Image (cartoon, rainbow, N blue to C red; front, side):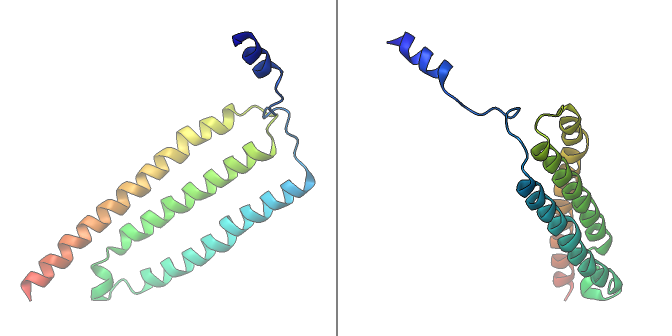
Length: 138
């Protein structure tokens, strides 16, 4: 019985990543999604960060730590840009050597993700204590 299971597993046809070919439709869909993420959404997010930073002298905005917001958004944009480009490259060119993409993920994407997360938690923590301190003074 074990021999039949092993022979069934060995003869089953499971497509490997080297066997997958990129069709023109998948390339177009990948380029459209890349453009939506990295051009439209990042521009929209950047617009609101600029508006937020222009009003940084307001008391309510000062409590939200605008410099940390700008730094957080900058690292977040770099993270998304590098991640989406690397994943699009790995998806569209599965036959190519993926060591460069793996190095890009390990050297840039993961540290940027952790920096973004740490800055976000730090900003929220500082904001919590700043607002509570000011509320205690009133």
